[in-house]
Image 1 (cartoon, rainbow, N blue to C red):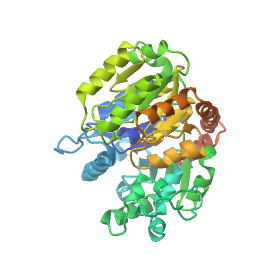
Image 2 (image 1 turned 135 degrees about the vertical axis):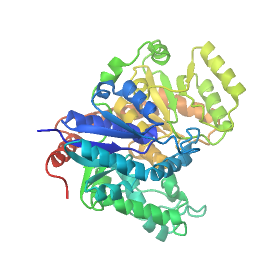
Image 3 (image 1 turned 45 degrees about the vertical axis):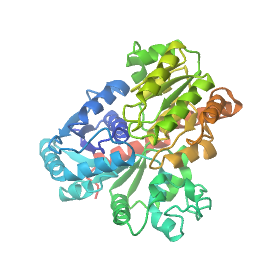
Length: 465
């Protein structure tokens, strides 16, 4: 019997593409065919990600691109933060007709298309799928607690917690099932300025409701770290909640096939075990000012800890080229640090020399750090990253408290605590336990693996209602 095909359609930003790539690879491992749809301008980045982190899947996924070159001025990769996310959402909405025609072509070409799996932020694809009588799975790329808080946004508005106010920011929010005890300021950045008077608020709530009606809601988390949030979320999902995380390469093949001659890995090979701090703010997050960058650089120098810092060209708007050049020269001369524009993050985190991660707390990065058994310092920048930091330091205790507003002296102290102090030692033990839990979840018989098998089995049967 011909294998069923699943069409996977992510938001065209790497933080959303990456987990959906790993998800696609898992579907293939279960005997399904996958057609992965990207925009033409993001396809090269997708193929690079495949070759660097999951080379075994490069030949098993079928890639199709939507032409987006005609959209002058859109898709500017220099944009950062939530601006880049909204631009991607707007871009994809403008390509709705193009995507619908492509989906029709795929339906005509393939013997059996089982379903469309599309990003939660592309809720309009549900209407397209329904028009073509195709069931849809809505893919939520973050954790269950964040989605619960977005669902409860109207309640948070009614209770006065949202939008965030200076006079009430330290007050605790009302009890919400499945959500940890939070102060108003600890609510996701994405909720801080929400207001029912804003047309975008109603649009966001409508989008969430539409997604929760999908045949499946797929989440990139796992039961062992969010058991209460997952249980609470099931009450809002109309059909099936599929919990499949952590969505990462299921084996070490990516490490074995990586280019060990690369400058970063070669540099790490000469360092002692767990002696290097890895610093990265992901692919989209931006730092608010060069002043913060300078404090971080001085703090790293003062700590005396070896580091690898991924410094994207668009990380900060008012970049001081002269300062960064001299900083890099000093670090290189002393063999204490390496500043690079990009790094194969999972390979770096899994290197024996890496003992800590200063991260923007993007959900993919958090999961990769857990998967690698590396404790964290959190510098959240946008979306739900401050909520993730709350989990890291206060709930899971797999990191050391950190504040992006700290000066160089405080940054240096936090780095030393993580890398050499008792706080870091405790965090390292905790993350080692979580690493084992994550590996068990996706192994045969694990909670996430069972969810995957059930999802695949439902696709192999007649189409979902």
